[in-house]
Length: 267
Image (cartoon, rainbow, N blue to C red; front, side, top):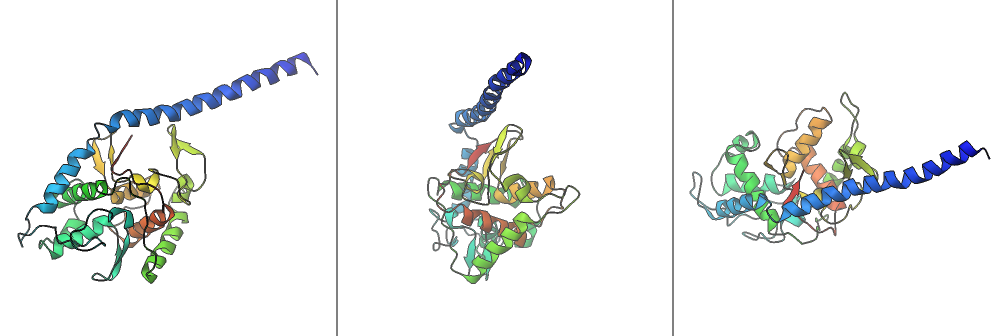
């Protein structure tokens, strides 16, 4: 073997482990960064606001949300988050947490549900919906996801969500699966979880709502999905539209058994 070729092979053998080590260190560094921020996660402020809003008498009917049924009976909050989206007989549709909260705000407190749904994220009553969702999610922190699948609509929404997840389109020909359909993909030094299967505790669906350090905002799952559509160069879907609820059903059912860490903290 030519000496120069031998030297090249030796250099490659050294460089490959070094590159792998650098890649691993980047991922570990991000994980350590998040860990340091967890103790002072600003999401706690939204949790406090959400709990106050749940108990406060508000709206045209001057009522609280303490009779709101999130799927486990009127007023039961603990454990509700890890079983949503799910089918509700009173509305005859599958709803996620945010959509269900708007229903309760309309029926119990007298707010205009359509007006809330049309409000921009982070403003007015929509900001209150995010705070409520943050507190309710926190009430199930550490519990394992177990979305119900017994109703025909729950099954249908899972299949709709699966189709939407793999649907490619737009000027970039992207789908949700373009980023989250295989193992080992990364973006901006961050691992991208494979959401077509159970990604494990606290990853993907099990981490939202989450506080975004980069913009100082609390992001709900509905907003997270909206931003995914933006990155695919699609128009924003309507709040709690069938496609966002279906995607939540698909990811939530795939996350069965994963432990919720919501509200988490993100880059």
